[in-house]
Length: 252
Image 1 (spheres, one colour):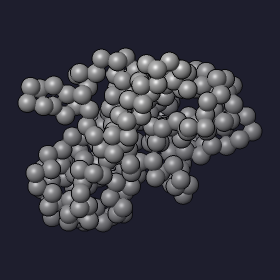
Image 2 (cartoon, helix red, strand yellow; image 1 turned 45 degrees about the horizontal axis):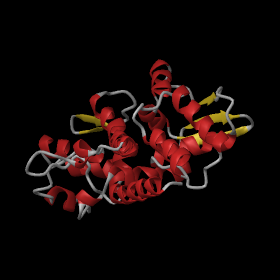
Image 3 (cartoon, helix red, strand yellow; image 1 turned 135 degrees about the vertical axis):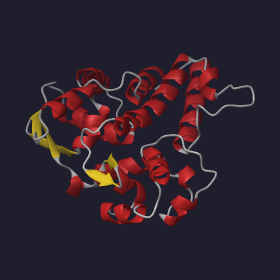
Image 4 (tube, helix red, strand yellow; image 1 turned 45 degrees about the vertical axis):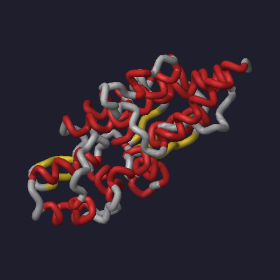
């Protein structure tokens, strides 16, 4: 690897660390400039795009009623998301918000789905037991669902293996699954027809939850299969998967 490539790799790893710890690539200075707007390096731009696309995938759920299974006051939402974001049961949240305004509920839901929120007054969040809501990022909470086997409601059949997953995660992250669930919500399993390896599909599913690609995945064949699966399942074209694969292929 050339010296320039080593420097770029080191820069990317620093930025990755900052993003994973809550840095906002769109925060603006007094001149209206942001790290995102100033990014010149193509792969750095892909890193920022990928980071932002994760929240965008879930924010989009707020604008549609598909897959909603919970009503708080007069607003529909997704039980899975509000419970994992707060650590509270849906019934507790319904009771809590009976005494709150619609504006307070909207503020909470915007935060729960990863939208940018004004934290000038955090009283509402403190009452929910969330002392530092600005540090509780969507990408830190949703990955917890990856290990929650009790609430997984869908099976992806890969060769002879069964990979359990949440429909909502697939719906939010994959246009292919979104279309399938819109056509028939009762579907509980589907055969993977990409003919990719079990390891590839396991890596893809974990990525959908975490937005991360395991460091151990460096095999060129698996990376190529992930590219194909990324296209087949119609993931966000600016997703982090594109970034992770390019980084592995270029800087490892």
